[in-house]
Image (cartoon, rainbow, N blue to C red; front, side):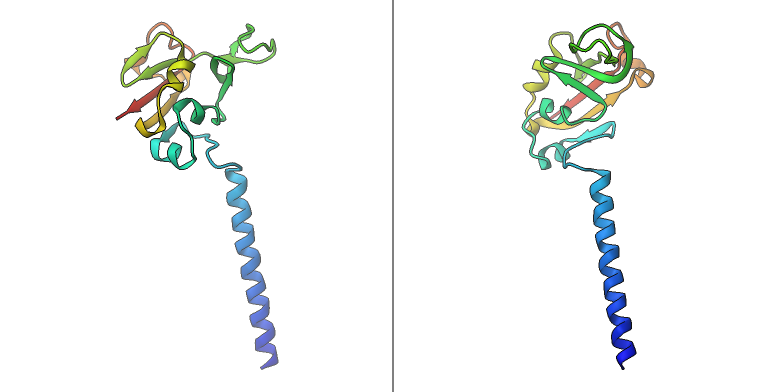
Length: 148
């Protein structure tokens, strides 16, 4: 009887450790709610994270650099001083909202899109830009926002 009690205690301890390990692994894969690394973000994910606009959601995307009123994909090869850092490489993307090309200030436009209206945001790196978006300005990639 005593051996069964010990075995049960060992199993309970093992199960508790496994649960803690699984929780730690889940936290390590997404260290902060709303920190994105996928190329498609749904509107419900944005709202669940508590963001109020497309801009707020994208400031937490690992692929993007947003500094003041400028936005860019990480890893580009244009070494000019867009972000006040000579060493930062970036690609400046084209913003497309509901199929319309935004040729104005992308950051201002993203700030004006409320989270309640967002269906999805899709990021296309320069090598992934679909034919329908290949035009001057899309060499650095595309940020596509679909709203209701």
